[in-house]
Image 1 (cartoon, rainbow, N blue to C red):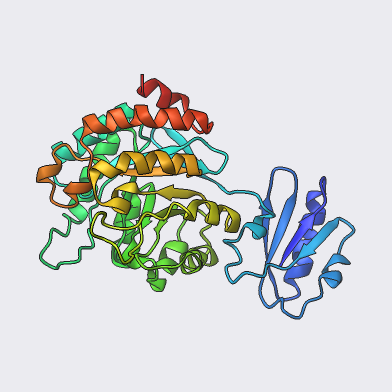
Image 2: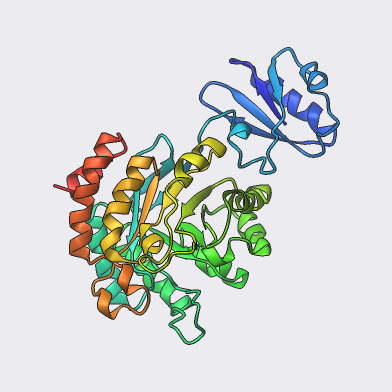
Length: 353
């Protein structure tokens, strides 16, 4: 249930309403919007009469039920308003959200060595990226494939951030690594294989670093949103949803099927920001530019693109990685669509010159 307060409701009255509803055994969560305050009610509300809640205060405008299984994640829970997730980076705050400029995340699949990750960070920043992606811990289909350098790679990511001021996004695979990883990461990624690792979702939900939640390879939209609900239910509302391609019957020409229809579907269902990963979504570098441009046109809030100085020698996912030079030219191409959609930052525009 959500309780919508009238415009101009006094703060003491909002607090009184929250305290009253808490005495009913509910958990009120105040959501401050542009014009109104909404109080989300978590708990056993099935038998509650909305009119009974309406009588608690003359400042209550409306009481609505949230019918979907995913409560906190739903668009209704914020009375239709989109979330603005602010991530603090050395270069300043970066906003992820429907009404914010496009955020570009770029970097290699895996952190291989200091020279490689630092040089890649410098190149993607010069092109217009605000975040560096790079895996310290790598989930691989084969147990014999490169698994990442682990904790030592976190130090290399920290050095790259120190050198460039870029924010860091890296994947968490095991709750035991949460503390050292959170010391370095500005955004913690939960990968496709862990999307329904509910104990891990609860752990990251209990801390306050923003979470990038990738869609599982065979997950429905609802399963994905319910996974996000676990994180929000644990207390962390800073979740970004990342579509990275799903498994379908045809994988002959592309690694996955990039579900761009997820963008308008998610926009209608949830207030959370949306990111698209066309690199994993297609698995082939030559398809990444067109899918990246299509993603902006469809309304994505962010892009994650793999960039490697020498894709042919990459320890993981080389075929889907762009060279730094190709990434430079791609950002210039993306600027055309980004400006048309009114989602392009001045910093992007300067980098694309």
